[in-house]
Length: 309
Ligand code: FE
Ligand code: FE
Image 1: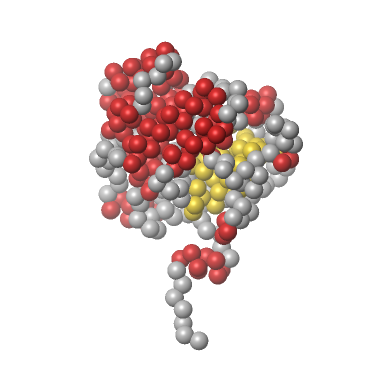
Image 2: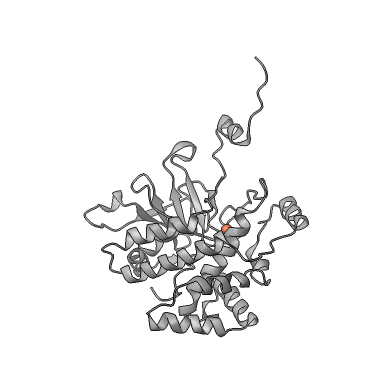
């Protein structure tokens, strides 16, 4: 038989290794906006979900026509790869000026809102200087939420998401490498916003963690805490919704008694349209319940004003 040259995907399939990455398409914000509008129907927080959907529309517009966004230099990419580091590590890039142009572009295409609090927040953002905006960006990504006014957080978060998704989607093949701990995004180093239990094709039955910042998804074994990596006594908590029993719910939280943390999981077999960020925002009642039970959320949804649950 003649020798056959296998493509990377075929090698993984032949060796039965789960594909390590599941990357979003270039229309990720359009998909998120559509999902938010779907979830808003009859939802008690419909007004809020529709406002975020409008923000996702603006994110897509900027991603489709981005301002000049200098990303990491080829030498820096080679260095990251050699050391197994995230190629677009957020700690460095949020402190550089690159993403600020996205914030201006986003403010330009976001429609003037009728909500006075949102309008005030946009004005405050528009008037802020570079140093102030960067302080807010660093505060948001490093979990120091007291550094920024809650109402402006979703706009700063939205701008950062566009910049990092742009850089992530532009990375050359092979630039994203698996890191040792696997609990942080291998592209940008941010924590996951939720987990996706996939149900089709080569990803069937596998869990991928969805990055809160760049939306890259990476494989992470099921039944292991995505924060402390403990496997013992993990449990699932979900709410009965619209007559659908908790065990059949498309969104369930995996709780860990070792670190008292939790991460929501979307089961695509029960709702194939589920989207990591949108379904997280539409299930804040589950966060309230988990908080009442003493569990801690490990990563924010960057489109939600911290503390406004
Ligand atoms: Fe990421
Ligand atoms: Fe844990």
